[in-house]
Amino acid sequence: MFARHLAFAALISVSLLRPSHAEPVTHTQFENGLEVVVIEDRRAPVVVNMVWYRAGAADEPLGQSGIAHFLEHLMFKGTETTDPGEFSALVEANGGRDNAFVSWDYTGFFQRVAADRLELMMEMEADRMVNLSFTEAEWLPERGVILEERGQVLESRVGAQFNETMLAALYKAHPYGVPILGWRHEMETLTGEMAMDFYHAHYGPNNAIVVIAGDVDTDDAIAKAVRHFGPIPPNPNIEPRARTMEPPHLAERRLVFEDSRVGTPYVSRMYLVPPRRAGDQAEAAALHMLAALLGGSSTTSVLERRLNFEEGIALSAWANYSGTRRDYGTFSVGIAPVDGVSLEEAEAAMDRVIVEFLQEGVDLEQFERVRHQMRAAEIYALDDAQARARRFGVGLSVGLDVEDVTGWIDAIEAVTPEDVIAAGETLLDRRASVTGFLTQPAAEELSQ
Image (cartoon, rainbow, N blue to C red; front, top):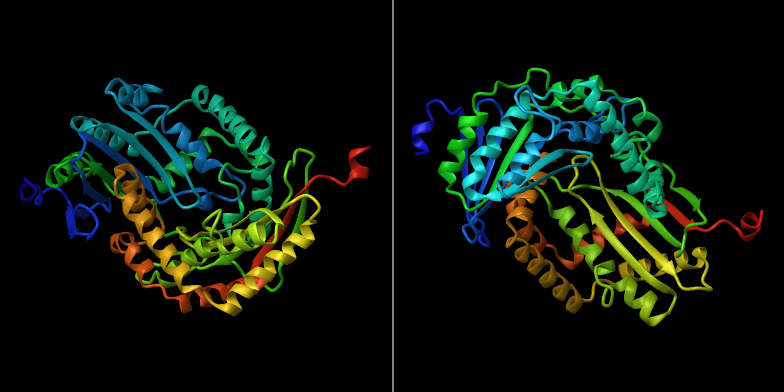
């Protein structure tokens, strides 16, 4: 079946990857630029259909923050042949569910349906890839919806506001410092015309990835994709991504965020670090392992064991690495102290434990235990077809290859204790970092 479509389908490459831990993954690219990934998983008669666009909040025009998220909402308003809301109504009528999401680097849409409904999902996604249509009566209320979403998701949560402020301070120039939802004062000026301009500049087969995972035959799934997406011409407006990159960071930044809603004060620090890179994920894997060793467990990680259980200084302490981004990764550490311990004292204790960890080296028994846990978590995640589809969508959207996604477990396996310590040395240089105190206003301010 697949061979019969080669003549007209617009396929220019096909690669079959057989990860040792999962069913085969097939990756192909059409002549119009569309990439398609198919993951067979026959354990349940369902399929996940995802369409990813390499366009997100970091690609927005200056002064139009939130336009990528606004457009994601408007993608459900209809096309030249479908009514507003009809897309989701059809998904639901066919027993499925759908949703969408936006990050700095991508926008994704998905449906989870019975396997025999896959072609209908592809037909509808291909339609709104090029035929989006809406009126002012449709986009104007939706702007109110995203403004309300900012209020509920971000402005009503002091921790989210603090994190937004931290990111804005961490990035001097790069748009990762702009919130995905957008700044309220700019969101209030967004229009349907702006959203359509963003759509025409970034949406098209030559900037998209289709990921299909579940109870499908690979040849049949690709044939369906060929039928619906193959005839769409490349969007000539799509240009290589051009983002303002970070200048050298010569000094650390510090901030204090005061809010009467704070229940538990804490210290948070973010570092700029390398992201996962195509063809060489060694540094990212070492940072991932470092985060797990320092703060991956509430009972056995270095920070928790020392600061919580042994010294009684912290209610909790943590570390995290976020590396699946196109341009920069972040490494975060933090501590929430017990009553009677100031944020300054908590920060000093956290830094002391990190330095001691780097000086003393990695406990080999703990290292092997954490690596086995991480490997198990990665393998268990393969049981979820939607999670697997998301991994490939995210990976390809930020510049990784399919081989990088399937090879992540091997990259973790290759990390040595020496690699972890070398990665940890980056935490001693605070020039590319921001440290924030989240706390209540001083007592005298509260009484006024």
